[in-house]
Amino acid sequence: MKRVLVLVVDDDDGIVDFISSCLKTAGFDVLTAFNGRDGCKIAAESRPDMVILDLMMPDMHGFEVCQKLREDGTLKGVKIVISSGKSYSVDVKSALRLGADAYLTKPYTAESLLKTVQQVLSGGGAPPPAE
Image (cartoon, rainbow, N blue to C red; front, side, top):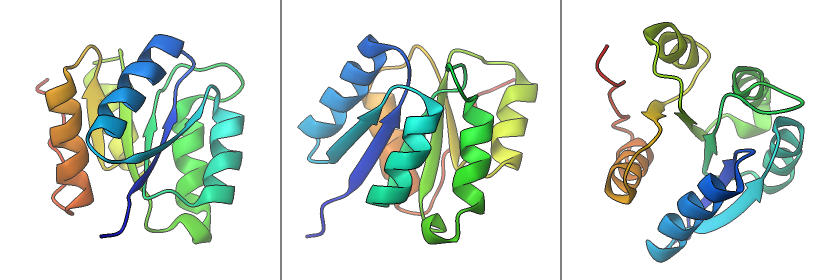
């Protein structure tokens, strides 16, 4: 069975540790980045299957990272899940318009994280949070 590589991009060490731990326990390979610029660089080098991406980060906003990933032809198939404390419908709609496959509003449980990851990887996507 092919191992699934997930890149976690978030400037909060605690969130990165939480997501990484959940994913590794579930059998995923995980890479991490703590800002948008490094996230873009690591994604281009490693070509992950999925990127879990925060919005509010130093150097580069998550929307800009999402857009850059979608514009990179070598990353065409990468799935993008936004993981943000921002729950405004305008943010959710903007993320989906820019090419995100799903939007998770922090805080969330390990179960909801893994459910969303599995749904997106299976091609089903995940519904945006209720407005």
